[in-house]
Amino acid sequence: MRAPLCLLLLLAHAVDMLALYRRKKQAGTGLGGNCTGCVICSEENGCSTCQQRLFLFIRREGIRQYGKCVHDCPLGFFGIRGQEANRCKKCGATCESCFSQDFCIRCKRRFHLYKGKCLPTCPPGTLTHQSTRECQEECEPSPWGSWSPCIHNGKTCGSGWGLETRVREAGPAKQEEMASCRVISESRKCPIKRPCPGERNPRQKNRKDRRQRKDRKLERRLHQHGSQ
Image (tube, rainbow, N blue to C red; front, side):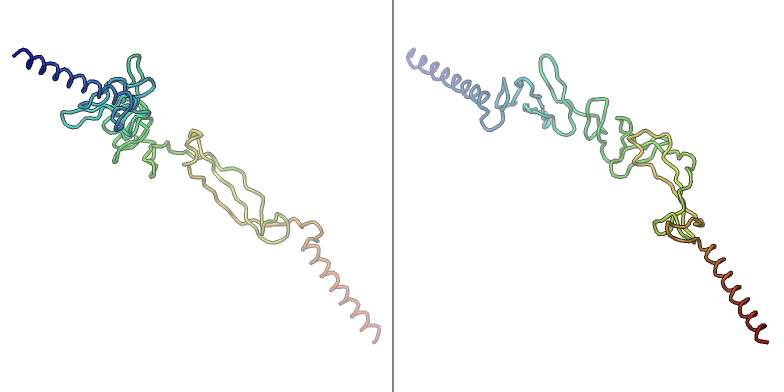
């Protein structure tokens, strides 16, 4: 009786040692990718301790949880480094991506991002950026600037009518917000009275033409008077 009992005990011990060896080998070599980067790992719960610089990410499925060592925490989680372990912690309920528990980077649908917080609506004095759903400060336009030179066909000289323009720049908004501020401009007709280089003033030309016509009329009259 003693010999079979001892044999059974030795067989049970060998099975336990084989299972322990397999778990250690899996933790060291990362078989199947389940224990990659782990220091302590089990088949049932995955990693429980990670190598340095890696984060322990705990995935929960019902009452079961499974650990995995990752270089970067997945979307919806942020990394916390500690003296004993580095862990991935879940962002707030309204936050899709975050830098820390108190600072959100992107909000979930139907929420708006304002200074790291996810709000149901943007606060007064701000506008919603359609693509990013960020709340940005409204721009208060400054006073009108000076009128630009009068231009016609790309030139500031010549004769006739041109256009001059003035603008209202973005007001006291911060530099990073100025891109969303609308710049207002207006234009009006203006006369161009400065002759271009090498050109005569049209008024002077007209006066000269009138003078020449008067001279010709005077000559004809003198000629007619002399013939009589």
